[in-house]
Length: 172
Image (cartoon, rainbow, N blue to C red; front, top):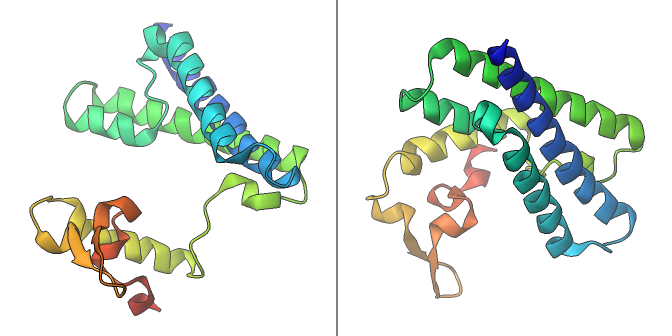
């Protein structure tokens, strides 16, 4: 029975994070920026804090499949539990997205999903795979840390999600 409580806790926590976090982005768009970046960040932070306190003692409050996979790789949880945690998290996020779509049928701000800056979905996946291969597995490669931008100032590549390691438009 305890296992099912942990799976339900992951579902609820992930649902809450997506519903309130992405909901804050949608509300910010509807109200023409009334929440602002600070309000959106506060909404994410508060719901995350609440869900960690509410579910941490039940499931460990992974809330994110990436955390679950990292815990599985580190052998902190077994394969069965990791699989069901990820399934619970994906279901929770999907249900939250569905509820937001029902509440906001015109889907402002793509329901809080980030835009891929003019590239397609498959190109985005390819870009992420190449970026990970080139920069994600090691922090010792100089091209992934610093380069000089056209205006002549040095720039830390990791500050822009690591995409600076390759040119996104080269994949178009």
